Every structure is written in structure tokens, then in C-alpha cells.
Length: 240
Image (cartoon, rainbow, N blue to C red; front, side, top):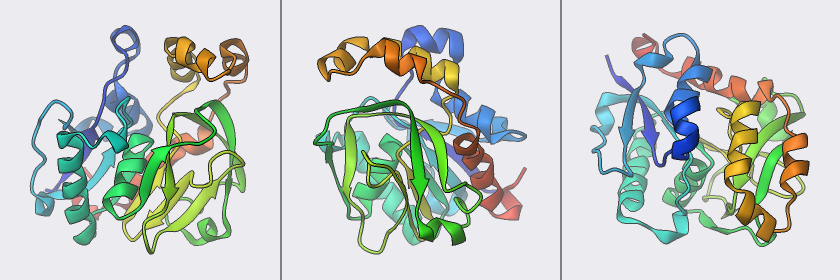
């Protein structure tokens, strides 16, 4: 049976991790039944990814790292993602993972000119999402949790934008068997509220009010459902 991977590119802040778990725990929770069978590979810590031929699909997590820093582990992961994409392995990048996937496939990533986007925001799907295998079940407008300083400035050649809002033009894209989402489907309301508190100082420097952001945090069931939908897209032989 081929492996289903959670490619961990960063860790939740230690204080939160001890109480709420890590990114991979949150992703497994939203994957639902069988989520515990997804294998975690911590690429930021130097763990090696398996051969592409051994992989049925992969979710790439968020991270406090920045794609534009081009750390060696990040660049090595990007090379693996290019190979996986060429082999039509289903991929889902989240936040940093979304940006890394876009960069790996020829797009451009850099700091958003308007600063960070944080908290629960409203995202709109594009017309292309209506026929997309992953995003077609989403309503035209839905709530999603976000926290990012960098953004996909230009999509890879051949990629299709699937979601956006007034702040972020590329909240979701698809390129063949690869999807990227700038928002966090794995963040529930508690995780979002607590994560914002960890970033109080940089958010204040960006003139974003922590109390207002936390007050506006809401449930994001439509965004969360994407992880189960992605798992359902994987080859039947890998469904365990």
C-alpha cells in the first residue's frame, strides 16, 4: 500500500503544542477516519521524504518559515514536490505549503505588500471552482482562518485560481493534481484564537488589533471539510 504523507514544514508554538497538539495533529483530526494512518515527515528537521513512487498523496503543512528565505530543507522539499507533481501525485499545500508548492512549480512568492492577513476572513470561490474536484462543494463565499505575511504574487504557468478575497488574490489554486490553499483548513476556532495571541506583538506592529481579531474568530466548517475531500481523492488502493 502506498504511503499517505503529512509533510511537516514547521511546528506549532511550543506553548500551544503541549495543550492542543501540532499541525499534523490538527490535520489528522480534520482528515477524519483513517487520519492516524497518515505518516508525518518533518522536513524542517531534516527527515527524508520517500521516493515519489511510494506515495499516494501528501498534505504540506504551514510554517513560520518564509519561502523567500530559500532554506536548504525548503528548496529540497520544493524539488521533491516538482517530482511528485510530474508523477501526478495528489498534493495539497496549506499556507506555507501552498506558497512552497506555487514556487516549486514556477510561481512567485514574497511578502504581501499590505502586510499580514490574520484571523477569520471571508473567501470567495471563482467560477473555475465549480468544476474543481476539491473545491466544487464549497459555497461561493465561506469563512476561513488565515495567518500569513507572505503570499503567492504570481501563480505558476498553467495554474488556475480557485478562490480569493479583497486582500489575497490567490487563496486557492490548482495545477494538475496539486492544490494550494492560503487559508488553514486545520485551524479550528480555539487554535486560531490562541495562535493570534502568540503573535500579538508582530500583529500590533502591523496595526492589527488582537482583541478585534480574536472577537471575529468564527467556526470554519466549509474550509475544514477540504481535508476529508482531499483524502477521498486519493487512489482507492491507498485508502486505508
